[in-house]
Image (cartoon, helix red, strand yellow):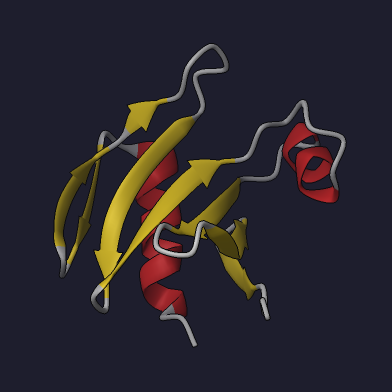
Length: 98
């Protein structure tokens, strides 16, 4: 189970600042290629994750929420390369992967 308070804090920091500060250290918020989406890597409980601002142009449910003005951030576990959670307006929802 993920630390929801930590992931909520990371999502807020990603969308509002230039760095992510966690117990695992400080990470810089960067922008992706042409879409200029915000992203940052961070350490949580010995695992490395990536927080990624949701692309509002995607036809998915999450893209539709982003188009409607919601703040959507996806979280990916970098060791497994699987998405593990999403934050919508600060509320964390975990994905349960096999």
